[in-house]
Length: 399
Image 1 (tube, helix red, strand yellow):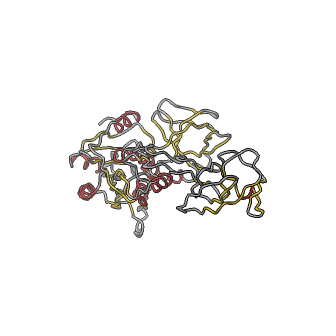
Image 2 (cartoon, rainbow, N blue to C red; image 1 turned 90 degrees about the vertical axis):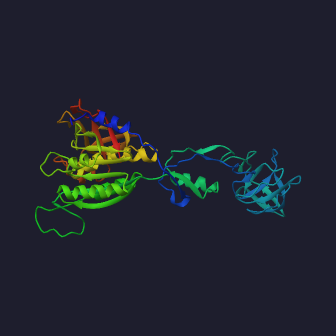
């Protein structure tokens, strides 16, 4: 299968259809990070009655009032609705219902109390410190649309509506394993200098958890076809997406690309004019997918961010892409290939604009995962880009 352009690979990904996204009910307290699968509509006005916004004295506003008789005390939660009399005020606390006929509340710090009356030292405007009916929301108002990622404000609003369970899109299960006879998992003892510690499967696991999936990690698999085939079938039994790292290039022991075809998956693309990660592979069978990532740590991480995130988004009804912003180069960069490139860079704000430089970034192979530490982003350059100069505007992806 011939290599394709980066934009074409994204178009293929964009056009993938999931026959049905699964919806489930979760407790509100467990809904953080899920994607909402229903509209949240206000079932009532909030507040349903005029209420006090602070501690003070409720009264009916008139110009140039100096003194008012204290007619009672109105604690928060009281079921009694006081009724104001002429030239009277009611001591009222934050959250209390405003007394009948009152329309204004003067804070405690604006008055002094003398002989059962308040003396107004600092007057307020009519309607001050009163929460009117529906100030927060009105009955039948759409508050949170389906497809919203649930964060703490959404949880707070739903709690105020007495919603204990909420409908959300079920997170896809992403099975992950790394291939390579040289790999050691965490905790394994190194016995040969040729052995290296695998980080890919754990990095991808973290990406999955951060961006809306459920991770199922199967560890490291040796480079033999039978083991990879058995593990692939096992992972597919319990996963919606299987992500592998390594084994998709053109080496004698790169068996993953062959196994994917042999178990009946349709290859959507294999090989993209992309740096890093040109030997990436995506395959589909029904609603199950295999994403074959390169073995180098930086390559597998970058390609997971580019391709795995939107694939997860297909299952949760959410445009699950990295945020792209414009930034200005603070030092030059010379592009060396005619591919689409993703370059690790530092980013920071200066005078309200994003700036980019490459201080302390190492230039070498696609294995340097430490380049993503710190305040890092991915600068994307297109195939037609060459030398970028100080002051040029570039696209950067924030993660």
